[in-house]
Image 1 (cartoon, rainbow, N blue to C red):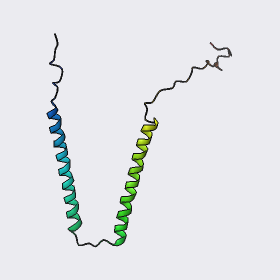
Image 2 (image 1 turned 90 degrees about the vertical axis):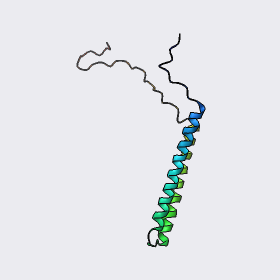
Image 3 (image 1 turned 60 degrees about the horizontal axis):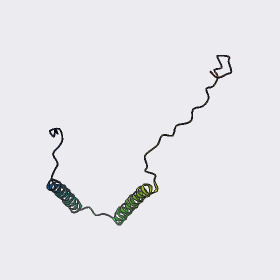
Image 4 (image 1 turned 180 degrees about the vertical axis):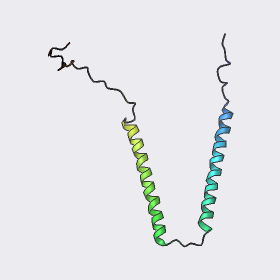
Amino acid sequence: MSVTHDQPTPSSPQDGKLARWLVIAVLCALLVGAGALGYLGWVSTDTKVPEAGYVALVLGVVFSLIVGVGLMALVFYSGRAGYDEPAVLIQEPESEPESDPEDGRSDPR
């Protein structure tokens, strides 16, 4: 006799596909919205950006890409080199009990 009322019902593969496509659609809508907002913010003003501003923008993007690629390379390197293994507690061996100077005895108990 098996009791199944406590166990969740298995989901069909169609449920996962629908959720996946829904997430992709929401993320694409957010990307389009962010692009439109960026474009409108860029062209809605008459302020001229000097060449130094564009140079700073390009240098900031390049530096950010270098840092991101470097950090991802370190993540992959540490994963393949075994640095991401679980921590293991190394216990120190128990030493001899020391004598108590207030006791007056020098022999261990």
